[in-house]
Amino acid sequence: MTSRISHTTVDSHDAHAQSHWWSEVLGWSQDPKDPNLPGHEECMIFSPDGRQRVLFIEVPEGKTTKNRLHLDLTPTDRTRDEEVERLLAHGATMHQDLRKPDGGWATLLDPEGNEFCILRSESERPDNYAHLVV
Image (cartoon, rainbow, N blue to C red; front, side, top):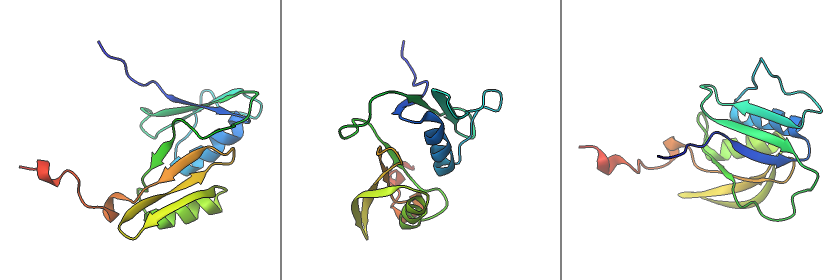
């Protein structure tokens, strides 16, 4: 027997604000039958197909150190650099810029200081699985 991941949980100061911010970043939505409202201590967002979920839970303590787990995001309809600019305009802050012309990534912080990385889009990188095609 094995297990599967039900959802990823993120401790938050303001679960509603975080769920709203991340839903716009990812293009995800909330459950219309159980909407995320200001003051809710638990707010979940869902991928368009409903299979992936992120739950934001309010906790009293703030973030004090580097995340032990973070999201790596790949842009779906723009370049890595265009996505970095979009997210900076959306309220993210640059933490580490490790971008290079042939690779690398940018580590950004969400409004509560959680790290996440922006990688190159699939169209910007070589096909890592080309050798598997027979």
